[in-house]
Image 1 (cartoon, helix red, strand yellow):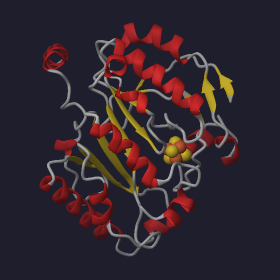
Image 2 (cartoon, rainbow, N blue to C red; image 1 turned 180 degrees about the horizontal axis):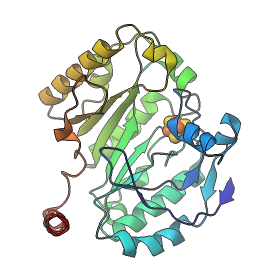
Image 3 (cartoon, protein in one colour; image 1 turned 60 degrees about the vertical axis):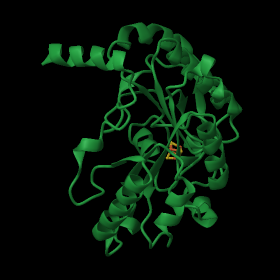
Image 4 (tube, helix red, strand yellow; image 1 turned 90 degrees about the horizontal axis):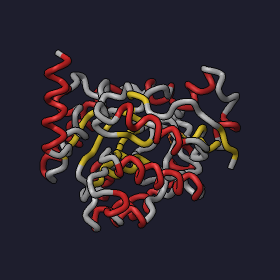
Length: 285
Ligand code: SF4
């Protein structure tokens, strides 16, 4: 894999349910065609030229050195670190990416910083070693369909759906916290499918985030777009409530946003950290 150097790594994310974030790879071989928002931004900013370049990920060779410098600086402010929003931390068939991700999780956990991870790849079994990686991280996979034809069109080089679920279930069975990002969920004119059937496949998880598909002309042209997403959101909420799963519906998906659930990943903070955070919040008021 090609390598690049960066000047900074940790940053405060603008995503409503996230806190700090890092991306230790430039590009992503999964090549999603929803389209991929991260790729669109990188092209717009002139960082990469096109889709072909996006498909050839470059690893940030100084990621661990940057963390050593940045952790002491941000430690007291960080509630958790999300990996990743602009690449995939367990990129399918790229073990080099997964190896670096494991080192990053270990490094963050060493300073009691929780990680919230999201992938369209496969989780390594090594993560069950909670002495090395901690037991307070949350591991998620993106799952918006079970249809292999849809995956081929929209997430062509990511891991098969069944394999993603299997690796997540393994972590769950070993006592780790798991979640699903059901975003960007496609409209029926892209793939006709049964939402409940997908939910039933992943009913073991602790949390579900559901969100609509943006930036896709065909999806926004779907005549019943608004009602469709409203109904889907209601079905997800109902399913989560009856299965004791926490949920958050991404803003813009329902006709009226519910902001009460946006702190979905803050609830697992240990009591000692909550106290510290409460004091910080009070001081900054
Ligand atoms: S997995 Fe995420 S970062 Fe990678 S191409 Fe797909 S949407 Fe983009």
